Length: 281
Image (tube, rainbow, N blue to C red; front, side, top):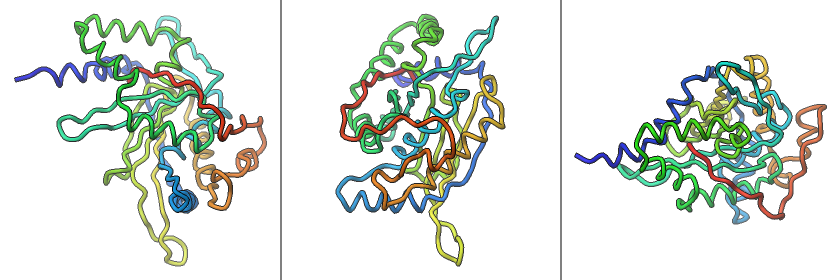
């Protein structure tokens, strides 16, 4: 009997132990993905395929930037308080390997509210194909430490509020769309966690089939209330449904789609990618 598999999952256990203090509540909504699917088809025809998770990251960045109350974290136990972050970093869970060798590693994508869809797709491809990143190094380090020491090290890292966005992100995104999963809930350690399964075909108006995605949103009730979380989910659905294959990048100015509010940071299509720091799961 080997304990290698147990050691490989120690970092996950440390995260789950740390996350027990959260108060996760789950919401869900259906998204009409016909616009996204049309844009994906046009991108494939042009030789630049785009994954669904890139659209989710794009929408999450724009919407969280508009809702600073949800781009935050609960810190402290004896003296609890809420800390808001001025940048939107997304923690992306990436599934690699197969069978008994399957692993999930995470990557923190910085400033997703400022990246174009094309830039986000390049980052997704990079982390899907390159498994020798900082998150894997951190997981291996935690696996080598004695369990009590590793648990303390994880908690010490999470206690540094200023580093929390770079280690854990400010929003988490997870997708199981490559399987026959329609719906699932998860808590990624952030105030808002987005989950997505596969896109299904359902009867729509005039008996035409409609591409539908069930989008899940888990929020930490310590940070925001249900009404605020519902506003975030509503705007995410609105922006995803506003995707149009005829528009550059899939969207026109998001400000016009989401109503009045502060200007969103402009896309920097073709510009240098933001630095990427790898996080703990």
